Length: 386
Image 1 (tube, helix red, strand yellow):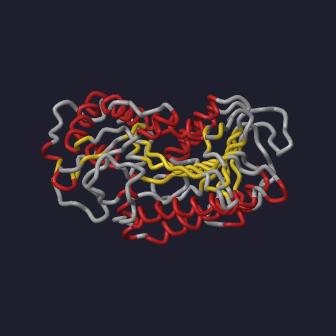
Image 2 (cartoon, rainbow, N blue to C red):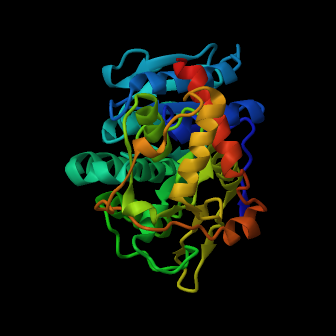
Image 3 (cartoon, one colour):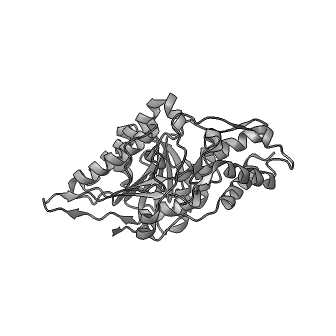
């Protein structure tokens, strides 16, 4: 493994207004001296854009302006630029720059790399959601396949004319690649060639493309299979957030597979810690006996290594919502709960084997479910009020 320092580096994060992306950007800005973060997001309306704007405000709060410009055009302050219009595209910023752009536009991605010349790239931009992929497949092809291909191409060309290029490409995969695998816990050594949703198929495709580019162009790349990420300011389409919205509005929540589902719920801070550690350890470049590069490529699970029953999860969530004052004492949960069959694209169990993450990086997620849901419930109360 090749050590990658993060101090005084330029890190490009795609999907920077997303749940993981914004938390990662803020963590990097708080933790590493001299780091510059360039955030990119298309700010689509898959869910409430104001939540994405809220996250970006949290990132800006973590960034202290740097007054002296450097050779790559970074100057003072922070800002939002729409690179698609060309306005202010050449204007650098201090520790944090956000650019509204879509990585499915190859020309835009190329310009971003030319202007900012990132040392490390973290690709978190993706069209998320298993069920949404059933009715809106185009969005997944454009973002998850074409967008990631554009990132790979830009990383490849970052080495042109003898330039040092990107030191490490880290990208989001998903636990969904395991499909209906009946072997638990899920290991990165398991076969993952039977996806049950288009979303899962695009994530596995990303892993295959990254492997090919690692082999062909010697690009150190690491894929991260995330397991059911939750926490404050998360995605509203995730079950815990959607359940809260419906219960607060007096509606009914639907629990699939008649409650016989288990998920490896992983708290956002643990996900971010895992990403930060992986960023600092790139797969080493080696040459094989044939004189060609052995692909500097790795894949890790990041999960809590504990599979929680969904009914128990909902019970803890309800308790914490009452405790935080989101729901009133004595709320009749039974009257607002419905057990329904499994939905297309869903799986009954997710469960991460994180032994490789522990062996290589000395880290294993550990935040308990109650602590994580308590943090979410308290954030929800503060964000939405009464």
